[in-house]
Image 1 (tube, rainbow, N blue to C red):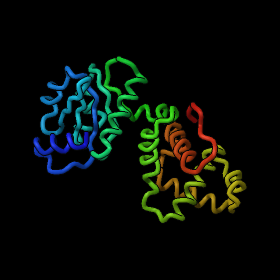
Image 2: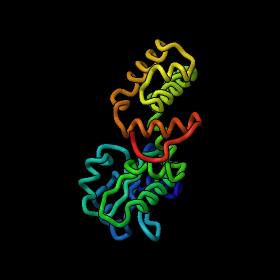
Image 3: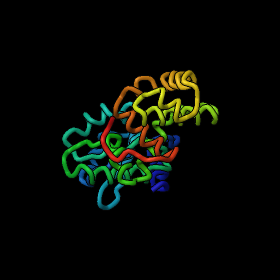
Image 4: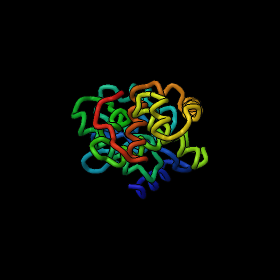
Amino acid sequence: MPSAVEAAAGRIGWPDLDTVVPVLLPLDQARDARFRFGADGLVIERGRDAVLLLRAGPRATRGPLTEALAGRWAVVGPELGWPQVPAAARLAELAAGLVGPDPGPVFVDDHLIPLTLRGEPGALAVLTARRLAPLADLRPTQRENLLVTLHSWLRHWGSRAEVSAELFVHPQTVSYRLKRLRDLYGTDLDDPTARFELLVVLASQLGGPAPSGGRR
């Protein structure tokens, strides 16, 4: 698919390929998608279905896509770089299997945890990149210290004393690291879905038991 994407992008005049949002569609919707999205998208027909590739931008965000695809069967994949389009399309196919034939649109972003817990590495990769992005600019030692502290804090339900005991660090050190994490993650640390996603990601990064289901 990457070579087909490059060729199609060249034909419609895209100067480069950065990040795209793939949308899985029935074949009979391919023509309408070409008309509806114009130069912001390209459609690749695969025989059994079609994949609309939307250039990242305002029209490729959740709100406009929900409105444009209302009442249609469609599965919106995660926004990824164009070399990862096949992986994103596969996630869309797997998400479609989770929700069945109901009209959409369905967003893969809403099903990353179920796909990850089913052992899908592509879903875990997307989840990991997103949830660890706030730590990307830190020095390796800082990043590692914050990761292990966050992992312990999540598993111990926010008990600083238990984190301190587990990591063999002073409680003030735990408090300092948690303040730094608050600065980086903001209200995500209070959101049950975000906390559960972080716990799944950190279990895969640092080892130890992964959550088996449910959300804290």
